[in-house]
Image (cartoon, rainbow, N blue to C red):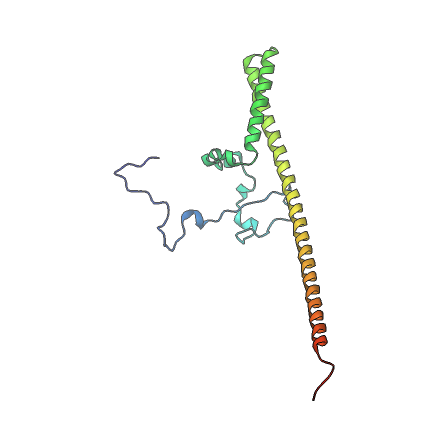
Length: 192
């Protein structure tokens, strides 16, 4: 992938300010959300591009294939695994589980390849289970935080309404007192 010094630089797209969009913008990417196994009643529904599903998809891409799935994996996905929430905890639990199960199988008489297979299986199973447990806990925390925020907002609006009502009552009391003082200052007699 390295470029020779004699070779002119490759252009990825038009220069800035060009009127024609780059190649990757010309054809919009359509994302599909899977809600279940059946697609009844969803045909012809407009997508994000504003075109019906049957117009944007070719018949061959109705079901994704393993080859398409593998082609969608990028090297950047593996470099950013540490940024995925719960991935670290899942991997550490999987490593520990795999080591314990593999050692246990070896100590209790299994040969090394068989113990390694058990260790790898335990690693996968432990990692997936811990990842899913962590994700469920995060979901519950988010739901609890949303409830807390809702309660705090409601209490703040109640407190603000009470403060406004108290300020209105104080203002009315001050006006009433000022009116009484003004009436008391009026003399009950007149010289002219």
